Image (cartoon, rainbow, N blue to C red; front, side):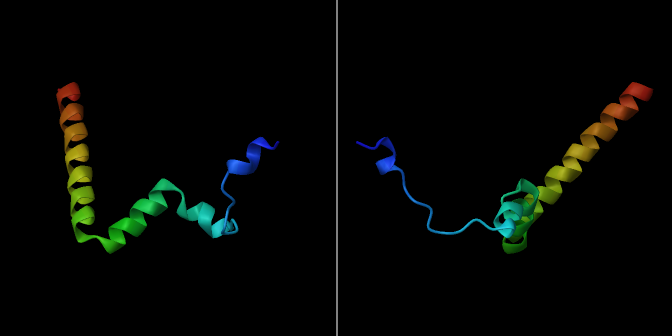
Length: 62
């Protein structure tokens, strides 16, 4: 009796391009190229994040 008989077989070969596409930054960029809404949300998030750290920096330096 084989225990591994229930595991699904991979149907696609692994390629180096697939490994690059699995990186989160590349996947986010690909998604942003397809979605205007996601692009706007990411830009607003980066601006808010930068503004918050700018505020913290100014408060710390006085």
